[in-house]
Amino acid sequence: MDDIIIDELIRSHRRTISLIIDSAGRLVVRAPMKVTITEINKFINRKRSWIIEKKNLVLEKNKNKKPFEIKDGEAILFLGEKKFIKVADNAKYALELSGNQFILNNKYMKNARKLLILLLRKQAAKIIGEKALKFSEVLNLPFNKFGITNAQRRWGSCSSKKSLNFSWRLVMAPEQVIDYVVIHELVHTIYMNHSKEFWAIIKKIMPNYEIYKIWLQNNSHLLNL
Image (cartoon, rainbow, N blue to C red; front, top):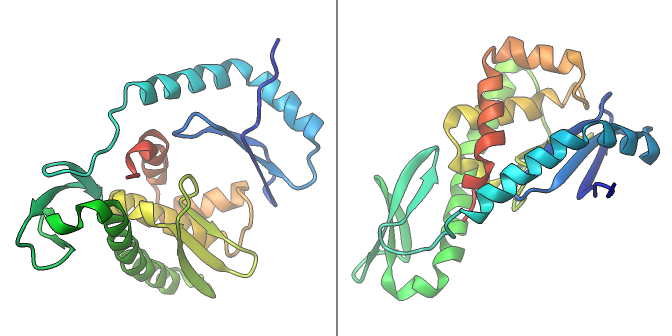
């Protein structure tokens, strides 16, 4: 029987081991600091059937996925809604978001992907930053720093120094999903784990949080360029 390879191991002050098959089909393991590799491998072997089934489903989905192309009429998610690329010869700016369109000056087509990422990153800093400040004040959960990253599979993080970081890709998700991730990371300022107490606070703040957690798990492959 072949060994199952761990693609990423994340250790933290959590109490339990969790497994995730991400949108690329990678096995991501989250484990407590003191759990040994032997214990982790035993846990993985108990979940072997589930891991293989999930990996196969993701890989099959990716095989049939159409590569994203930056062209006139192509749709990009922004706050969970489709915005369409409009390529124009006489556009005022290299790229701008106007209504339900990303208007791209045809002269900048070669740099379109970089321009889109830059624009989405700026929007993420503004929108997610405002949400972090709002929820921090409402929930009385202060943080020290805020940043936007290029992470592809980690939507948010909170350090022991209460520094919050979020992937710019999160701005492509619906606003309620963004709210969930922001609240999730803010609660980490008091619980640096995923204990029962942690989830109890999340549920108290956002009773239907599981809807948004599942949305991220099922749709993370859509939050990319």
